[in-house]
Length: 93
Length: 233
Image (cartoon, rainbow over all chains, first blue to last red; front, side, top):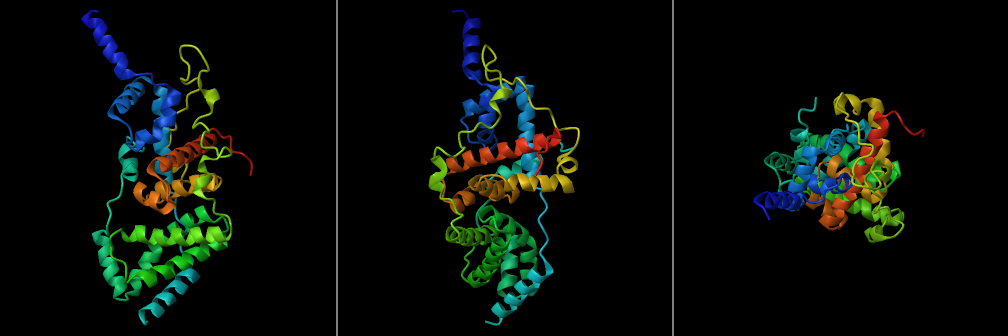
């Protein structure tokens, strides 16, 4: 086996068999940092080559970003007044 | 533009530190001292979030409002005993989830988490429609119809409009209860993974599966929205 063969074998091993489907199923583990270093490295290599998966990952990040910025409904004044009344009662306990 | 996206999103994924923050400690002192303004600001800060999380447990709006009301009373009752081992936020949400759970059980709407592994559950449903991948050959399981980037507009302009917001809220409400609970707590309210596992009494691995399913469904919904394939109500 030549040096070149060894090198290629090593790259094959490190790259593994990552598919796009596999990436979409592991994207949460990837985002949550719950993967082995080897798997993370394999996904990094796959992402470097695959525009579809880069887009998918980016959409997933945009989805999370958007969810985190959904506006909360304001407190209805009547509810607020009632809660403050409760607070005053509690205070004078 | 969202920049590279990473910086804006990643803080959500990192676990929150435990214990009260300095900002919360000041608030606690004021609350215990009976300062009404402190309680008013606490209500302003969390009421909407509490309603949202309550709605992830009980589907009835008025029941959710009652649960949140009970939560605030629970907060007042427990304020003197609160030791600050968790953050004030986590503590308030733990009161809420306990109340919501018992309420859900009473109304038999609460589905036990043991049902997760049931065959009727969709936890084996793929994140992406399988028809979008190559079915066989050398490129098997690689994209046949890859997603189109959403980058021409920022998420704010695209999704956080009035119409987009309503659509997204509906998509969240349409999720199965467990998926909805995890997604709302983790991604909408930014609670940490550990806390959410505690509230739902599930393992981290289980939580990740639920979060994964939920996010995949919401992404799909946003994709349909971008493509203009909004299903009629």
